[in-house]
Length: 368
Image (tube, rainbow, N blue to C red):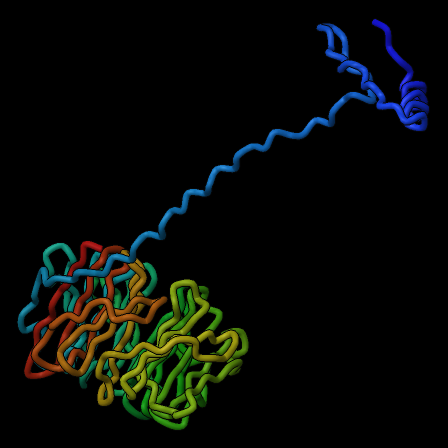
């Protein structure tokens, strides 16, 4: 093929234009198979755009509300008002205590009575299970703390030292340390192996209404009618944080969240509060129930949805969505104030009890 020098071609075209003649463009060079165009005739290659597929938007799964329905009832559970309900950590038992000085233990298969723990001289206010579900600690108006072997139905220790009614009790995950709160405004810390008091914490300026350990046992939280929640580290038993709402309502119950990062408190102003105790601030309020008279426990339920559960002084159990604070179910549970509830650790089950003259315990279960 005869190829013209591009520089010579450009000069010839310029001479023709200067002479007033119309230059004739050379014929387009068509590439012959096996050859390529000369560099000055090559067209730049433009990338072929590739269509980007539109992202498929997957809608967030709808939050399904719980649908708790009554599945069982234990009539005449106690001779006097039920004071506390707690499922065992292994989920096999439901324990209840009462003003009749007894702790009763029911299986969670058919809620038949299995065992009775006795020994207190006055009404029992609270009890708790050890993490292995083998030991129960109870506290009473008789000012004593008792420790029971559940399997053998035997009182192992009676721990004395409080000077007024003992109202609340908790034990650390290892089962080696217990903490009790009383109307003497102190929290006492007990060595459970020796049955002796190892610390007296001057915790509050009014009766202590709640104590709880966090999930690794490094912290104790206490609350009181004085409106304060105090956090104590268990290495030296010093107060490392105090939480209080601006209006200072009496705090009647507290619970650490399952992840250990938050505290849920009940107050006698019809409000539950979720605290980020590391930052020392209240981050959520839950309203919709009635609670101005009694110390009513509130709980986290995470076996199905993520709920908060509390009794109410209008006969209802109220269930909230933890995140949205929305009331997702109100259960018409009892004819009297619902002072006691607890959530099963493994299934979507709630136990509840009212106050005298209603002495029954009712069991509720949800599909979601």
